[in-house]
Image (tube, rainbow, N blue to C red; front, side, top):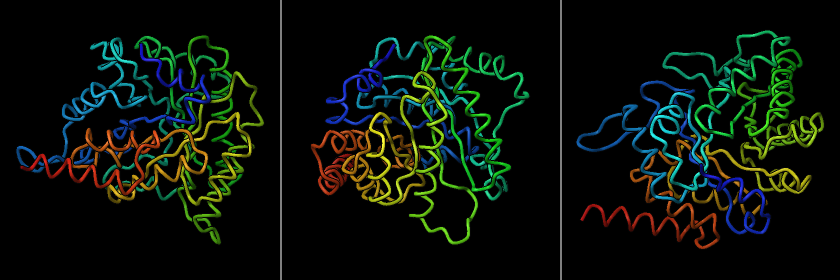
Length: 318
C-alpha cells in the first residue's frame, strides 16, 4: 500500500524540498453529472464516471502524485476491487464526510446557507458512528481519511459543526492504523465587513483554536485550507510548525494562476496542495500534474511551468 505521504510527513527535510501533491478526485461528493470536467475527444462532452475513474488510474500510473483523494465508492472500486495501490507508492485517501456547504447539485441552494455536518446519528452514538465510518475505509485498505468543516461565525451552527468534528477526532485518535487530515473551508455565506484577507484570518484563528482542543494523537496529519493572502498564509504556517498546512485549489481559473497558487503556497510556508478542479479541468491533466510536481519540487517557477505545459499541449496537436 502506498505510503508516500506518510514518508514525507516523517521527514521534514524531504517535505521542505518536495511538498505533498494530492489529486482531490472527490467532486462527486459535491457536484453531480456535470461536475467531473469536460473532455474534447472523440467529441466535447462532460466526463462520465467511468472516464473519471480512468483519469484517476492514469494519474496514479504516471507516478507524480503523493496521494489520491477518493469518494468511498471510488475507493471501493480502485483500492479494493482493483488493488490499484498495491503496486504504487501513492497514498490512497478517502473522504469521510460531506457537510452541506459542499452539496452543489444543479438548482441546489445549499451553498448559500450556513453549512451543517452531514451525519445520521446522535452524538451519544459517535463511537459507533465513527467505527462504522472508518470500517469501510480499512476494508478497502485505506488508512487516511479527509474530514471537512466550514465555520460561518455563527455560534449555533458552528458549535454543531465543531462538536461533530472534535468527537470524530477523539474517536479516530483511538483507532489503530487510521489517521485523518482536516479540510477547513472559508465561510460559505457572506459575512458583513469581511474581505478575503479577513476571512482568511478568521479561518486561521479558527484552525489554531480547534487544534488546541485536541491531543497529539487526535490531531490531523495535515490541514487543507484556502490560501487567501501571503501574509495570512505565512502567519498561519509559522504559528505552530508542528501543524502541516496545505492549500485547496478551489475553482479553476487558468493554468497560469494554478501554477502561481502552488508556488505561493510553498514559498510562504505551506507543505501540501490538494487540487481537484484545477487539475481535471485542464486539457491534459497528466502533463499538467507533471509540471505542477516540478513547481512543488522547486525546479520550475510558475512562468517556466506554464511555458512547459503549453509546449506539451502544442506537441500533442502536431
